[in-house]
Amino acid sequence: MQVTKEDVIRLLEQISLYLELNGENPFKIRAFKKAASALEFEERSITEIDNFEDIPNIGKGTAAIIAEYISTGSSSLFISLQNELPNSLLELLKIPGLGPKKISRLYRELGITDIATLKAACEEKKVRSLNGFGPMTEMNLLKQLADYGKRPERFPLAYMNSWIEKLEYDLNLIESIETYSRAGSFRRFRETLKDLDYVIATNDPEDVRDKLLDMYEATEAVAKGETKVTITLPDKFHIQVDFRLVHPHQFATALHHFTGSKEHNVRMRQLAKERGEKISEYGIEQLETGKILTFTNEEQFYHHFNLPYIPPEIREDGSEVDLYTDTYGLIAEKDILGDLHMHTNWSDGNNTLVEMIDACRNKGYQYMAVTDHSQFLKVANGLSVDRVLKQIEEIWKLNEKYADIEILAGIEMDILPDGSLDFDDAILEQLDFVIASIHSSFNQPQDMIMKRLKKACENPHVDMIAHPTGRLIGKRNGYDVDVDQLFQLAIDTNTILELNADPNRLDLSAEFVRKAQAAGVTIAINTDAHRIQELEHIAFGIGTARKGWIKKQHVINTYSKDRLLSYLKN
DNA sequence: GGAACAAATTCCTCTTGCCTTAGGGCAAG
Image (tube, rainbow, N blue to C red; front, side, top):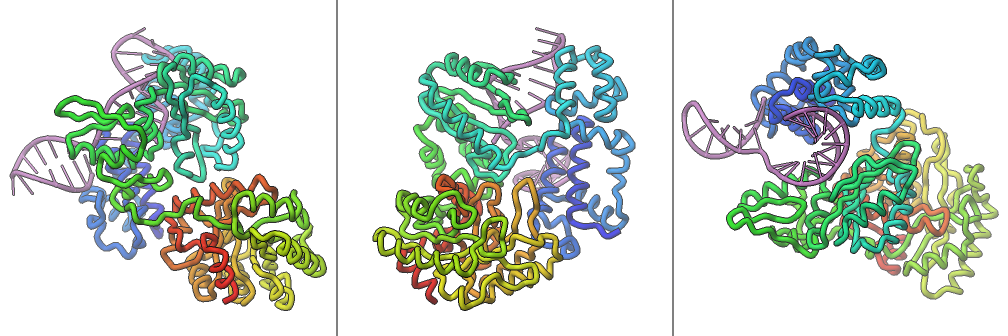
């Protein structure tokens, strides 16, 4: 059997889970987790690594386990762990409310090995007889088991977004809230979220707590304490929202703490410790004097450690604490001077040309590209040649009318399944901005997909490839792109790649867009708006770009109008 | 188990809140 790097990572993670169930030393458990993640970040493939001990966080013991696994296809440690505890127990760790201690007790005292036997034991009221368990625990377990498997572990940003708007509308109505902020993975613009986190500053926590609990009467409160309120939203998936209530002077440190990531917090705490200080959500404690420092904002908090303000989007694995500087040039929403991908009711958009133009003018954009679908996409009312020519004329007229914005006549043209393009060059050359994209035959093998993309990139009239991987977060993976090859194609043919800001897409992802920047690709961040409200999705695009450490200089729609026009001309 | 500092030992981020059950486990970033 050919062992892959993913196999090794999975092995180490499973070992770590087993040790947890066994109640092993927490640091040993973590050592395996750290080794797994060290391998994940390792650039080399498994055959290129001759000495695993060279990798930080992998020592003698783990290296021996890996070597055994690669040469024999199995691990004696893993086998002996499996003999001790059935594999199916690992699944129980995923059930909220069950941790290693409780699972271990259920197994040893009731012989529970999996979901089915746990459910049966709860129904027979056997569980309540165990030490540390009671009727409430049994009932809660049954509730969790009923949901088990039906609920995704994480939700796409787009799914959460409608809840977020509703929640914040309600939060704004609570007068005893001094201020509040999103926190957690949503504030960091992760593309999928497990729950929602808010930090609330108030001088009247009891009142805020009562109002929060009143907000959604139909839902149940998971927790309702002095400083923490957890509710589940009346959503079919029981989405959880955590509110942390703090006094206004604690707000900055609490916000930092609950924004995370966990790894970022660990790194910050290490820094503090080296200086004889201790960070908690309520402030920084100076250990010598016992004095607790608080701050008016997160900027001050970071400056206390002689660090620049580190934007939430890049607070992930902890390395940002050492890598990020004030002069990095990370892109910001204010840098965006135009949107180069949107639809009108000429194809499948909801608004008229004029409505879209007015909305872009209201956003203060210097330019915009109108890019309705092309004829192939019948379901989207794609434009025929005649209608394209008509729309170009219409846009010329509107350009004369509006002095404050440059309207580019564009198209989002399909790359057809056979690799040809939906319009001839004679049409394309009349357009100011040509997007090529794939909306069909997603299941083709990689070489065919790449052939299609190559054809598009090599056409001299094509300016940009939209949503380059075709994924829909949590719904479909997209087509089989060789992204490295696509980046090289884009560079060789001077083709822009899009970061599509639709929260369902975020395509390219933060990870890919970071690689694209490193390769030297020019990027555009566009909304692909189908209605004027969706022009606001640019915030998701910017968040994702920042998560990918994108510098302003690599993003074409930060160019001034003149610079953009001359770039497109060449 | 890994790594640092010293050569065998020590530390590893942390602490707070809440529920459920009777002291402790789990969850949160």
